[in-house]
Length: 377
Image 1 (spheres, rainbow, N blue to C red):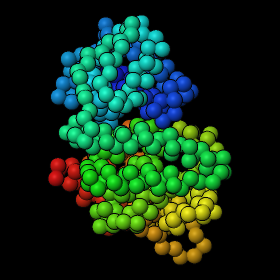
Image 2: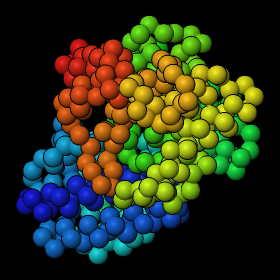
Image 3: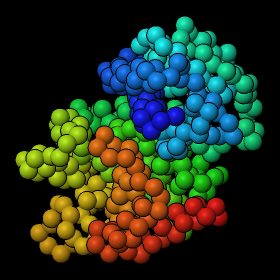
Image 4: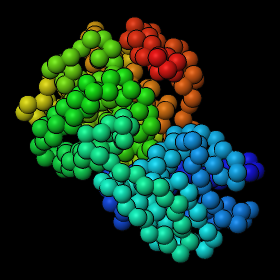
């Protein structure tokens, strides 16, 4: 496999998995899904210029193409997990594939089967499938990541309904957010710090749901590392889920812009902490901690962030944790203008940021957990 083919394959898989994430989050007919499908098809056709077909095999959790291992990254890991979820160990795509067929594959990858399903091949897509059965109550058949996928499938629609209501300036359904956090807390109780390793794997796209749940998981991991339990743990999770709610009041053109914001746009973007806090302050039942975190999460440990208060200000512990989680998640997430960083790069960067952008002691505590996961402890 040539370097060009490797790059084309990586781009195809990233577009494919991102399209599947969008289809799961919204629906298969969403415009973003169609756009990603077209781009993925273009990458496939580029691969067909040098390969008679695109055949992907999974051997010992390693993706193989053209008899060579595919360089590992988050998108590859997500594709392997999605294929294994459906019992697929061999996927062949032939030249001549049309968009409806690729959309069918995207649809398959976006869904979680409740039982073994014999997947139907299409004219240019063929599966090699092994039987995978799930037995209720048998955790040996379900990895921690799949458990989290269950929660995601159950909650994504409810979460988006909540945030769309916010965008329309309707009353926030706090019970929906609290229910999601309760699910995460309960799952943490069963699976402990393994969830911290999972959170980066869920960063497939830039939409509000995945970002907010990543921050929630990472904040919960930090809080548990500090020995926080009970009602305070739940409020930290709720604050994380709502920390970016102010972005619902920012123009989609600014939020979705891939290049650098101009000065006017940046000034508008900097209003989202205040807008979010004001909205939450006027919402009955919202924990005070969520209001404070929404307002403070971009302030920085050294006070050089935004918004800039008129008097001396001491950030809340949850706001510091959210800033740490946000920084980590941003570096672990693929963006249109940069690739995600490797774990050692992230650790070094966060060490550099400790004491200026990030709270130093909390950052060191967070990195201890990351180092423990990396070492397999």
